[in-house]
Length: 276
Image: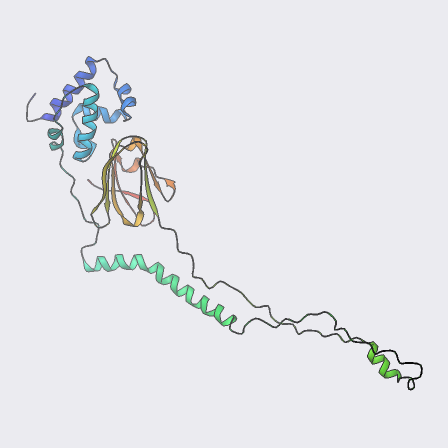
């Protein structure tokens, strides 16, 4: 093989080693927890389809180690161009203003709705609690019986008036209105969660283009990010990675190439494919 084409040479050696050991590619795919299509891409030497150099070096290195083939991983990585980082922040002043307006219009609208409501509740409660009086009849003390030698009998009208109990009826008043003056509960922050069932390279870039995380995750790892901070995500082993957004699983088929997924988060909570 030509030295100028290391990918073809290494791919041919890997394929020959598998045939010599009598191994089926499906059997190796189950053992390495990689799709068959990924191993076929490795054996054809089409490594740019695997993603960034770090992913290519990892996938080819694991496959070569399993077959016992010694390869130069640095040469493998040099066959793939490094991805170009593109800023997600608008460059123009108009673009930055539009981005600012879109993110803050919801808060302004919420404030305009809350202020009149709080003012109305304060106005209703300004008079203080209503005066509530019991409706039970008022007990009237009966006059003591006059001794036999007392003065003459009382006038009939006076006795009738004393025997009639007086009932005080409280005026009907409006029930005071009680309401919480606390502001509306803020919406929970959206969260992006990555769960790994096997080894996978992961790269997460922020909305300002800086790297939030770049690592080789292993089985059992769980990574969580605030969705508002995430600009772009690259997953090197889709078959061993579960992506969740706000507690719901995300289907990566639309943004997947071979076993690598590249996507960004849109404002409506969906994922969008991004160029390499």
